[in-house]
Image (cartoon, rainbow, N blue to C red; front, side, top):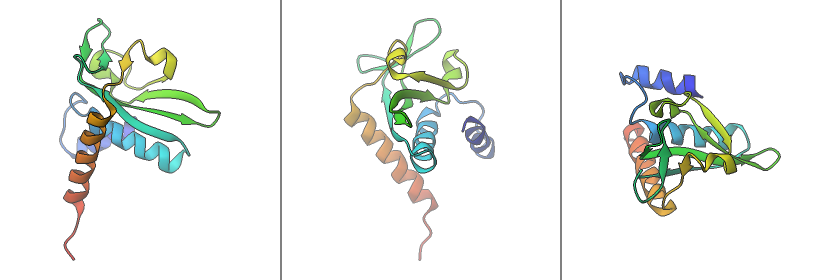
Length: 129
């Protein structure tokens, strides 16, 4: 999925993944549910008092990622833009292990951001009939 996302960035003339985590998380979540029979949700935090992701130096940042369950009901976290924080480009962790690095913020705030972005994306591709 990372390579698909990189192609989208290239076509969109976007250099690097910094600031693209919401788009990546939506793409990954939708793909996992559609093609992998997973239950997945986009999670995120603001990097301050309401969750976020930790970089390799221990600093916290606003970020979006995916959490889900597939197959044998093993909960996981997946992040396809983790390299912006010094980690490998793709991170997949058991959810319990992931809590060291990823702390979800308020789900309603995250959900509103996801819904607004999906609406924006769909609006950009709608064709008047």
